Image (tube, rainbow, N blue to C red; front, side):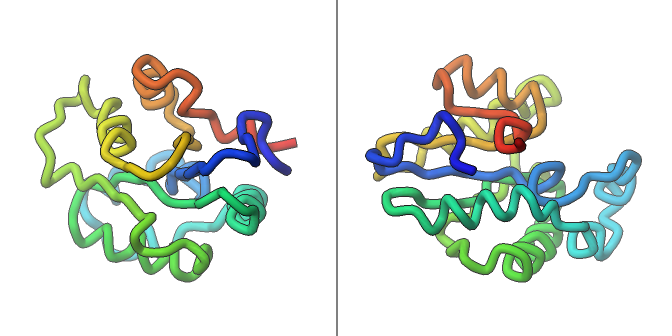
Length: 157
């Protein structure tokens, strides 16, 4: 399924969030993330319907697919990248962007702008889209770049 917002004639990058979009996010697992419990990310169940959309987009000319996610600690980046290599091996390392909160100076109120700031630094595309599940991130991104961020349900039939 090609999302309505994609224009197959333009050079575009579609960035997928991981947790809650490509991988299951279980209520209450935040305590494991905060406490840096090993295998929290590597044991996540893949959401096959969204991964299938990512694969279909990747196979289209002029469409690049990447990841824009976040985690609390650098060790969690390793787990996320291992998970991504296992379930989305077609995504190149240079298209994986992971914000590590331990290394950043965002407040609880400004974290919603972190992914927007990453998107603003990416060059070489006519348009960049973010597929996200967090409404604050979607709103903050679309406030600055209209129609950039979309809720994952826009990819479901």
